[in-house]
Image (cartoon, rainbow, N blue to C red; front, side, top):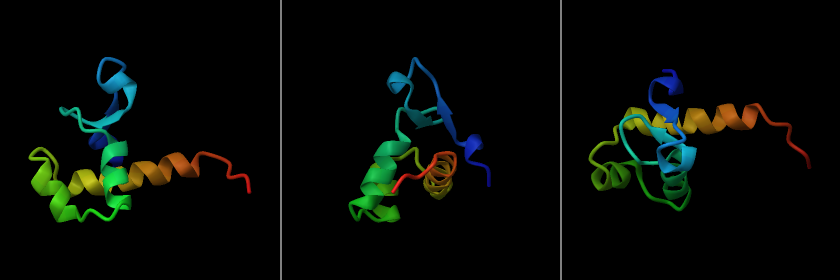
Length: 73
């Protein structure tokens, strides 16, 4: 799976934040909800346009972004 198939950045949609193609659902929102303990099933029930592939793409996107940054400790 390639996250690029599911996620786009468009300055005209949600101020350019990464969103799932064809939606206004941000990757940030999905990752935040998962981090707060929401289950994948709850996310899918709450957002009719999301699929399990979208959630996996969000996780891969986050890993790609973090992998491109130097971590300072």
